[in-house]
Length: 176
Image 1 (cartoon, rainbow, N blue to C red):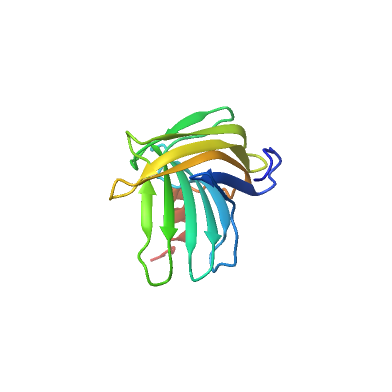
Image 2: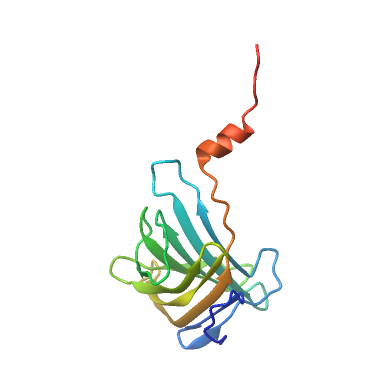
């Protein structure tokens, strides 16, 4: 497991049912990424934060953890309850792809099966997010997965572009 740091070291780790999970490649997509962006139109609480970590194994096996905070401005020291997917909520997902020929299995937090995410550091200027997390998640067969002792120390991307400003910059100017 990586140490708990607050420097933007781009680390992520946790225990999945007691087994160490750390991002590992190779992969066609990033094995670890994070963003915090203002993506909703003006007047809405438009910030979305996401962490995505992937661990690739043999025979197309993939394990993935995603944490998303929707429609919330984040400040250092904030704690979020990870629950069901809905606008304004923080949520978490564990996905397991056993092989190339077997369908993926998704586990989600809900309003009953929850977790917690805490930001020890959140620095918008230097784009650093670090903290801890844990969550329980459930699949459609009512099987559960326990994610414990989670920690992250990441540089996140940040566009801070409103849809209105983006539209104004990209629409063609027509003169008659």
